Image 1 (cartoon, rainbow, N blue to C red):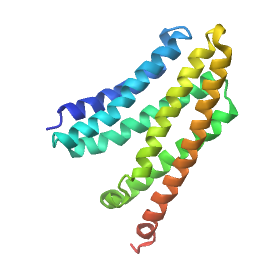
Image 2: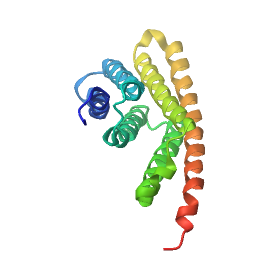
Image 3: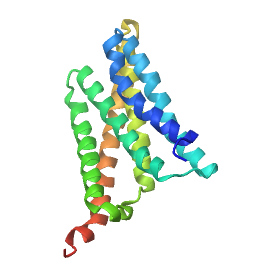
Image 4: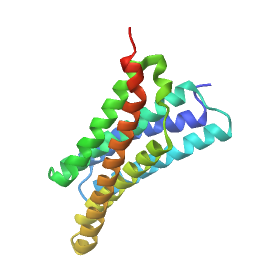
Length: 194
């Protein structure tokens, strides 16, 4: 059944992703940052919950397996666009964001090219940690940007923001490592004769 609770949570996560950007259209800062943080963290928690419930309740489906990574990527990409824009195009954020975006598009392209053979590129544990670290880094950056707008917490805002930037760099490096791993696994299929 497509509309079981795990799949509904995944669909809600997918729909919440653009909501992060919408917060900045309808609310002034720092409220936009705070609401975006709450929405993003709530949606990110469903990433753990939907997979856990699907396994425990034996409700794993092809629909969920297809939609889950898409929802993750959409969440990360939209949040990175928002953070990059509202951080004043900070180069310390742009470079790891570009690394993350490059890898996500590249691996999606590999999977699309391999089609039925894309099962050879099953999600690894390291890739799951990469996604978790990306989401934690983004949440910390939203928190730092929100605190920064509250004038009385300047030192804390600076610490939280730069801690988030550091996490984003670690996530960016992990992202490239997992991208290289997927490329190495796909290489034999790319060299195969037609």
